[in-house]
Length: 400
Image (cartoon, rainbow, N blue to C red):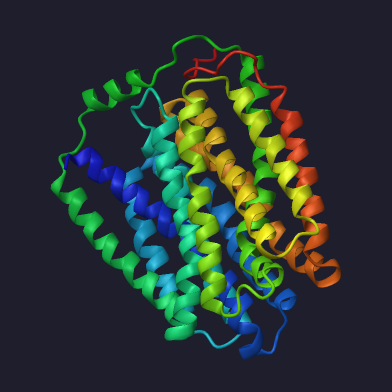
């Protein structure tokens, strides 16, 4: 296997672990800690908020350091950081100490998106498929968080749900360091060649650039609300809506895994489409379909709820590579990590605020109102995509 493919594999594994560790607590809180700590699900959820704040706020710092120092070095810090902080979370005995550990996990997990995605698109002309493959790994991390956590709760206790992935991350970090040391440093000529390979094919006016980034940030905010609400709450949604179907933590975890893993394939389809067709058309269809599925889910339960849950997760995951492709095409290589950082600060800031929103809405009205809110957000995404340039957005242009 070539060094470039090994690099890509480590980046994909990193994306998998990034989303897995961020969602362990969601399943643990829903299926175990409510009983053990004597707190309701609505009371436990806010303790996850500091971690998601750190997940968003840390992206700017991580992107700046990566652009100034080393993107590969920051990925190594990521592996060791999430590994040690996740293991630490397995030792806590109360919600406050758990919140502190989740904040540490979020701070180190913040490294991945601005740095890892900049490495994924570096030197590539067509970025849709690589971002989609990388996105699938991230979504499989979301899926496996519910599956592995549910399984470990039933077989080894909730603490093992933190110990196992934390240890795995440390071992992968050691392997990644060995890979970096065995790889020759890129020469200045190679770096320049990579930059030229991803250079703009045509000029894009400043007004168009600003319009596209405004749409990216708005749809990122709405998409962050939808993504966090669905991925964080899905184990609890399935626990409530699959009446008579899922009776244990492992069964809920399996159904969540089934939904997440099948829906992850949406990124590959969307990545293929945005490399070959109008971004505006693909984005609009994705946004509109989200809205329709959320409206349909409001009063469903049983097998039909499971089917519609797969439907809305398919299009929720499908949106992810679209914004990443747009950022990769519009941002120059020299500041691409910072561009991704800003995009993910918006995403994760909204995601952090979504966590207490989920608990507040669920505690008063259940998930019915939540799906109504998500349907409105998806409709807003659809309307915003109609403002994108009519032609296919090409490689980024130099703005003078």
